[in-house]
Image (cartoon, rainbow, N blue to C red; front, side, top):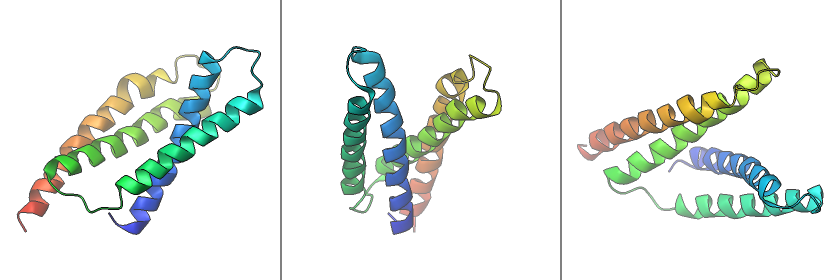
Length: 127
C-alpha cells in the first residue's frame, strides 16, 4: 500500500475507532464510571485498532479478495462517517440525521467499495 494512503487509512481507523469505542463504553458502562476513564479506555482501544491496521497494511496486497476487502472497508467507513456526522453538523436539531449513515451511505459505500476494489484487483492482475 502506498505510504500516504497507509497513513491516512490508519488515521481514519484511529478516529472512527475512538468515536465508536466512546459510544460503546458510554452505553455499556454504568454512569458511576468517570467520563475521563471511559475516554482513555476508548483511546487505548483506538490505538490498538490503529496499530492493527498499521501492521496489516504493511505487506503488499495479494489477490483480488484483498482489494475487495480494503475497498469495501475503506469506502464503507468514509461513507458511514459522512452520512452519520454530516447531518449532525448541517442540521443539528434533526434527531434522525445519523440514520443516513447507518442505513444508506455506510452500506452503499461498502458495496461500491467492494465493486471498485474488485474491478481494480482484476485489472491490476492482467498487467
